[in-house]
Image 1 (cartoon, rainbow, N blue to C red):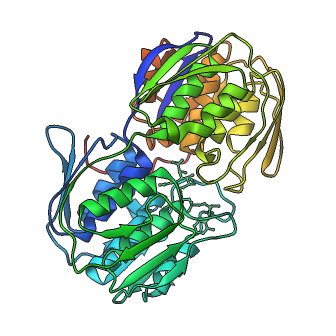
Image 2 (cartoon, helix red, strand yellow):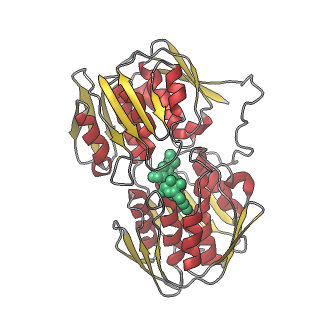
Image 3 (cartoon, rainbow, N blue to C red):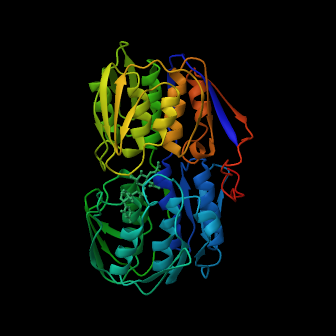
Length: 441
Ligand code: EPZ
């Protein structure tokens, strides 16, 4: 198990290029199941979640490797395979995105109930995914931890709103399934996240007929078959936001390049409200400060609201703000697992269910802490950048799911940070996922 050690205090400076979007690349890779032709996907980040997805696709009879340019080329070798096995699926929630394409292209699917991040009371439900597929005519049952689905799909009007808004991967799943369903499908309350738009662009490149892209109502006219295509995955807006917050918490001067500024509007508005100066160009954002950070209130919402995936990194920043900041997590229950760990560094954050209060600024002192999911891990690394002394962030495999070599990017910006192997002494150490896919990036 790797750990990252940070010696805090250095203001970061310089520019860094943002990786391709994990949350766009994963559904797009599963969408290749919809054709037997070759697809070439560029700008796919080198992450463990991508390697897991490659391994699941291999199990599903797809040949899936990086070419010498680093693009991932996918081609079907055996279209009879329809089982997405527990060992791999249990390590990554996005595996649920294999369900829609398998059903649509191969007429049946057996997919393990997902695993992945642990936050979210009662796990991470998939009821909206299953309700949407049933609306398209699928027969679905859940047996022994597997979703078993079959049937010929027919277009329908369906609604994806749930108790906490729409569903991002649910929209992706239903959209992919609808492309090959017979007739027309209307998806109401579709998620507006840019990753859904990027998937829709990929599907259109395969010959899918989709209207309303970028709106909450998607209209899909089913076609008989789809063909291969090439695609460049959009930049990762969450990594971009995390790197901007790293510049902010160290009161440095950082430019993130290869971004779509509009996708980060809410974050940049919050940072300006907190007193930072933002210079926004066509594909870059630069952050700097006059030294004082103002307390602000954050309330996570579906896009274009403040992204839940930046709530934990923003919480770390607000420990350095002057005054009382209020943070409300409205998308997930229990997405505050970084708070007890930040408090080990001296953050003094009060938490009441899905609401947190920070009375800053707090001087943080380095200590050993533990990541519990990828964004809480990022939050702890950011706090270590400003904490006095050494902070050791353990279980970095969580962070590696979504950030490509984060310690290298931060070191390039001047952070004193390194990765090393660690052996957890306690018997309750949670082993890394049972199978780390064989794919080497
Ligand atoms: C996607 O997860 C992202 N993952 C998450 O990013 C992100 O936090 C989330 O969207 C919200 O933006 C990927 O795209 C791979 P949801 P997803 O379905 O699709 C409830 C990261 O850090 N819900 O939009 O799983 C659910 O419990 C990850 O990169 C149901 O009730 O999220 C949650 O409260 C973490 N029933 C809310 O909806 C369902 O069937 C939003 O979930 C599905 C979801």
